[in-house]
Length: 244
Image (cartoon, rainbow, N blue to C red; front, side):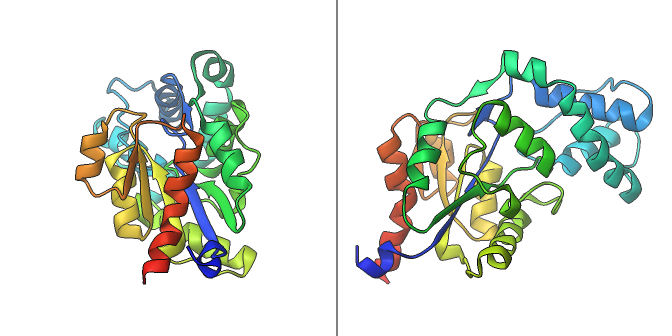
């Protein structure tokens, strides 16, 4: 790798649930509580997440109850969800945990020159921070430049949203060739492919390595335990710049 490529600034975007943390089912409970705060009644249908954004999850839940999530209700959902999750932090702390290797990976990438780390998640910003901070993973992540479910309902749109924020803050024009997305679901892989990012997939959730590779992830890791391998996977995008 040339010195020029080694110094190219990179924007690294971490998915939250099942990539950085395991929430122990508390996320679904928070959506159910959010639904109750919005409608005055408890849901009778299951909460389905599947890598969707908060708005998409709530819209699905409303539709399966024969209701419409209007723009006004969607905006209210963004207001009540921090309250819902905040009330469940004790359960989150008890039943959830940081993914093995997550803290070490963030720390190691933070030592690399030119690497800015944030999150790309379907959660709205306050809830993403709550989840990550609950398990001591907030340090080293710049939450001001993350992509959140409050930015857009479509996950792929969160990649350019995060890049735009990072460009405004740092005065650096991050591109698809200098953006890395780390996630565990097909929607993460799709977000990278459509939104424009190099995808490092980790088989730490419901989907195995073969599935994630078959969907087009650039690199697939079994988990985050091997810190050196995680760093190598992320920085391998600079090697592609060298080859151009």
